[in-house]
Image (cartoon, rainbow, N blue to C red; front, side):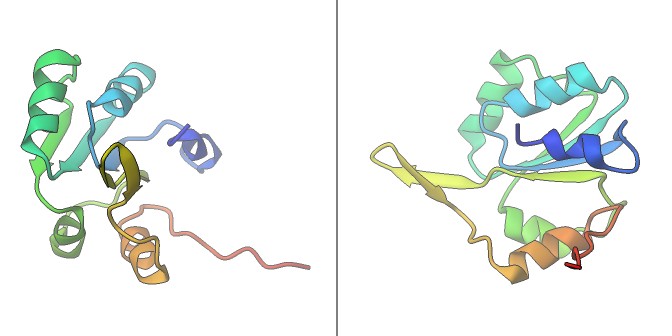
Length: 126
């Protein structure tokens, strides 16, 4: 469900996706199965998650470029091609209770929007 919005984009067959937070890589394998030509960039801070995703969960590494590091730093330094969509799945937690690792502030939304191929526009009420 994280990527349901892609079907409402002007280009419903995405070419480039950015995943902020890899987890076990389930979203990557689902996207690779649905969109055979998609190039995926993923950013994950935890090296154990990357190891599990690449060794045990079937990620096609020829179509997934995985970066270990902080998603905020990646987004502020990234100067490559824009993405068709971005999945923000940045969570942390203690004692089994998940919480947002990065606040969904207007500043963070603006940073993410800057890297989209199709810019987000505000809907005007009539």
